[in-house]
Length: 414
Image 1 (cartoon, rainbow, N blue to C red):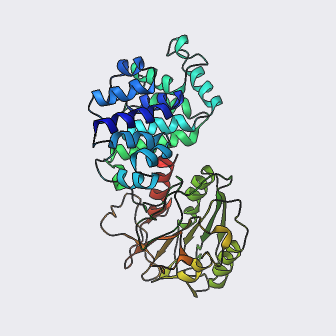
Image 2: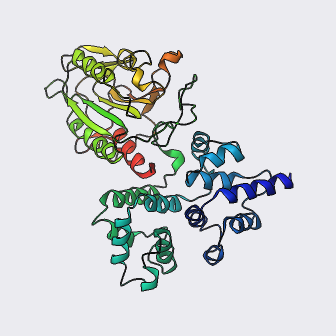
Image 3: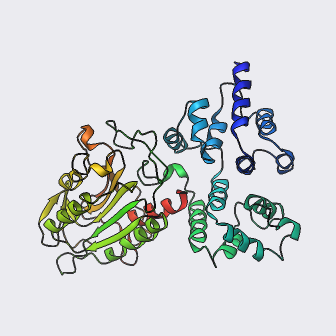
């Protein structure tokens, strides 16, 4: 076993490049003292320190798996550790499983998303806070953040300075920090994220088994720009017998987040039942050969497995989804098709609830059962089913389900 372990360490270290070593060292802050990390010059020494600190050992390589997952070395996960991106994503949703803290994850994803020009701007705005030799061109953003931590400019419970720096030119990342702070304040954890586990811009795979919580896939390639269409079908119902005040706001966070995630995002409003079907069918008949996936949001009243049009007629959800089966939409075969449906059952005219309402025990998120036929592979339907007359939304900001979904995607997607 020790011989195999030594061989594993050697082969992994040989496969890592300097930029990846720097990222790994950054992710290990909190587990290994900064001074010791700064002294590490090569991947072999890094893995030796991990073993010395008891972070990896024969039969316990979870921390190494997590580190390789974060730096995107899925090839090493698969060939040397018998794991995959999907397996890691599933494991890391388990409470207490993640060893890289949410704070460290946040800083890492911020660094990965900053452009070279962004990094130069950060360094410029830190000129009065850090020594010049710590802000030279050759200094990486990981090193800048480490210096900020070393000098007490940022810490886990105070990211004010980083937000102040980023808000002028990367408001999207500043918003991500806001969400992190809000979740930390409310004692949320990654394991409590209220959206389907399979929703991710990480690559997934092809094929589907009889699962309802996630797609058991290997890899989905997300390499095109745009990645695909994000279509929003939003029925407002501006009439006296069906009050949906605030629903017009539902599309705004979806458009913001999916545009940021490099989707071609479009919203269609106030459609009759037949128009809903025609619109979905129209997108299924387009050529998606140069796209990676398809996303659809539907906001409208409904009954069990049905969506209502503004003409008070219904369209079956399964009929809508069937437009994207393998046989009906061959250009998306083997690619993910995800439907988020904010529909509710109950009497018309029901009131919304304030944005502060606690709905943790009353709302359900269900999946529409689909046939297990391979023709329906790679399709997920995530439906918020709200019982009775309860509809959890704010007249100011729209559906809380959609707000939370978008906030978490903005925080956790790379």
